[in-house]
Each structure stands twice: as structure tokens, then as C-alpha cells.
Image 1 (spheres, rainbow over the protein chains, first blue to last red):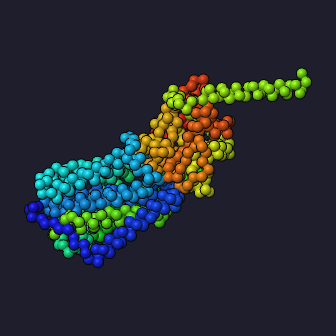
Image 2 (image 1 turned 180 degrees about the vertical axis):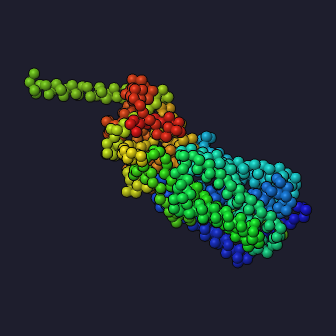
Length: 389
Length: 233
């Protein structure tokens, strides 16, 4: 019975708790320092160029935003699809979703060339831009999940939880469609320009968000000494495996379709065969570590340690996948003159070079630190975590 | 007529005519209060065959607009660049200037979240330096790599051409000159290969040549209807 579930704040007095907050706080401070340096000296101190205008901060930001949407899976499975087993975890699912989104948006905003003009972005809208729509989708997500959490926390509102859950579920599908479409709508670039990117990003969100949730849940229960049932973890493992398989499916369909389009052949050769780092990240990072290894771990090995390792692999593979999509997609030269070799001072016709810089990595890790710190503080101030799950 | 008298008359004629010519130029220019007209569509016609192996257009553009580099081509602003093309089948080599193509349907304008990227009624695509937040989505969307993000503090700006670190910029078709009735700096520096004019004006050279001679648009497959056209590409 769901009503029998007891929730309690974590105690949050141990040395370990404060050490965790200090570590996360250090990441946040480093991220803020990096943003300050980038704002003052310009993006010249990063690895980004006029050919690679979106770099490592965007890999982190998009990962966190996509994972935020997926972190809500467990709550959706409980409220929308009525699985009682997951109900005790719905609150944590909502908290992690909000925290991850906050971390991702912080990175995105602090990377802007003019972060001081955020107010301009809030007051001037071009509604043909998917970016403008995303501003509403992201802020709306905070509001919708807050409402959803309120119906869970407030006993008198419990009757509305299912309806709020449906709203949150639909909202996050639209939100991730919007995130995938940032790339899908780039009609002039061969690596993007596909409606498939919207559903691909949705299944990526399912996989990355579930992986992040599994690790946070295991850590929270272990460090607060709360029992975590084997059946629940086995089910979460199955869920993660299905999502990972779905990501592989969408990636395969995307690549195979492109291989039939003459115009796309050069990019596919770059990605799959001779793209150096990007080819390695695709096959080893994304497909092997992010796909095949977690599938073996959750379906063949089946243990707690295997599930944790699988979740870690999905997150590592997810970063590799976004690095390939975002940075590899820009590194590949734009095809302005088909059939011709091009050279210019703008490095037309050649694969653009890029190496992540310290400020970029620090800013990205700052976002991760913020997301986890918000989760930890949330667990201490409100009863998000069940006494046993 | 003795030579001295002829010289004097020549000077007098110049003194009378020169301000008059300047007045004609000013009369043709748009007044600051007058909005850009959709009846006009400014554009450039570039004859690649007549484009020689120089960078006069690049130098003139960057001088006119105060675009200075720091010796870092990967991050320096490039409003216009010379591209060298080599046909893979035949080895035929060409060189040509590449800049903002001032599309009728500009992808950069579509994606800009704040509307800072905009197209004027007369077809010139610009960035409003006051509302650009530096998100670089327009750079991602541009099919021609025509836009630059300003990676470093800017010094020595020209009064007509505001620029700033952390924002995006590109060729303005020398809008400040066009509004004064002049032609863009690149077209002035390279009259043999570049013609500037109103694509809609049937009496203009650019219109007449586009009507009578074959020309191409870059990435014509995207159907952007560019304002910059090329010949012999």
C-alpha cells in the first residue's frame, strides 16, 4: 500500500555528509570561477573557435538537461502507468529531475557570450526559434514538477497526483523533443538536419535519466543506511536495459538511413570509419561502453554491483554520444561546394580541431556539482526519501 | 585659350560640380528617419572567373568595418574570406570571396531566440548588437560559415560599426555605406569581379546581368534565395 510508505529527511550531520557538500561546493566554485574568467577574457581562453562554437560546456549542459527529463521516469512509471512498486521513489525522481535541469541550465546560461543579458532572453522572443520555445519548456518543467511534487507531499492533494503525473510526463516528452530539435532543425548541416533526433533524444533521456537515478538512489540509501529491495533494483535494471537497447536502435536507424543518401556519405565515412577521435568515441564510447556493456551487465550478469556499473557505463557512453553529436557534428566541414576540395583562412574543407579546455570542463563539472548539491540539500530539508524501498 | 586660363576654368568647374555631385549622392541616400524599403533587394553579383588571386575585398572590408585580428585565425572575426576551390574530377582551380549571402529566408534569423538576428526590409541580414546574447545558435545554423563569434575584447571600433566581445557578427553589406548611397567596401575595391545593386531595379546593372547571363546561388538546394549570386562557378 502506497499510503503505508514512510518518508523521512536524511539526517545530514555526519562528517561524510559535510565532506560531500564541500566536494560539490568546490566543483560549483570552480565552475563559477571558470564562467567569470570566460566572461572577462572572452571565449578565447576556451577551446572553442568559430568552427566549434558549441564545446564541452554544451556537452555537459545537454547531458544534464536530457537526463533531467529522464530522471522523471520512475515517477511517471508510478503515477502514469500505475506501477505501485515505484511509488515510494516518485518524490526522489521529481527532485533529481529538477536538480539536473537546474545544473544543465546554469552551464548553458553561464557559457553565453553575454550572460548579463539573460533578461533580454526573457523579454525578447522570436517564436520561430526552438531556443525561444525551450525557455518556456524548461521554466515550465520546473513549475510542472513542483506542482507534481506538491500533490505527492500534501496529503489533501494526493488525489491529483496521477493527473499531475500525466501533465509532467507529457511536458517532458515535449521538452526533450525541443532539445533534440535544437539539432534536428539545423537544415544546413549534414550531421544534424533530421526529425529522428527528437525521438532519439527522448530515448537518450530515458536511458541517461534512469542511469543517474539508479546511482543517486543507491548512494542515498547506502549512505543513509536505508534498505533497498532486490526486486526494485532488478526492475530498474530491466528498465535501463530496454532504454539502452532503444537508443542503439534509433542510432542504427539514423546511420543506416544516412548511408543511403549520397550527400550524407562523406559524413558517415567520417563518423564510422576515418574520423579519428570521433570514430573511436562512437564505436568504443557510445556503442560499446554506453550500449553493449550495460546490456550484458543488466541482462546477463544481474547483480547490484552490475547494475551500478551498468548505470555508470550508460552515463559515460552518454557523454561520448553527446560529444560525438555536438562537437563531431561541427568538426565535420560544411558541404558548401560538393565535388570540390576547399581551403581558406576559415579552415573550410578540413576537419576542425578542438580540444576541451580547463575552463570548459570546470564549468561543466560545476553544473554536475550544482545538480548533485541541490539533490543532497533537498534530501536533508524535505522528506523525499522513503525509509525503505 | 591659354593653358593657365584653361586650368583655372577647370578648377572652377570642379569647385562648382563636386559639391553638386555630392548633393546628388546625398539626395539618393535614405534619410535616417526613412525606413528601409521592401521594394528594394540589395545584392552582389560575383564573377568568379574575374576574381584574381588577391584579397583586396577582404582587406577593404576589414578596414572599412574596423575588423582587426589577433593573429589567431580560428577565433578572429572574418566577415569575408577568400576560398580556393579545386574540382576533384578535373583539378580545375578557382578562387572566390565568401561572406554572408543575405538570404531571403535566412536560417540564422529563424533560429535566433531573441530576434537579434534580423533581416531588413531591403534584404540586408544584420545582428542587433544590443539584443544578441551570444548563444551562437545562428553560427550553427548558417550554411556558409559566414558568422563570427567575438572571442576577445574589441578595440578601435568605427563609429558606424558597433562591435562587442561575446556577440556574433557578420558582413553587413556595409549597410552604413549603402544607407548613404554608397556601395559596399568590397565591391568598391574590386569593381572587375563584384557588382553591387538592387536586384529588383530593372535598370540596375546587377538586374540586367542576372537577366541576361547565367548565375548560381550557393546551397541552392536549400532554396534560401540568396542576395549574393555567383557567375562561372
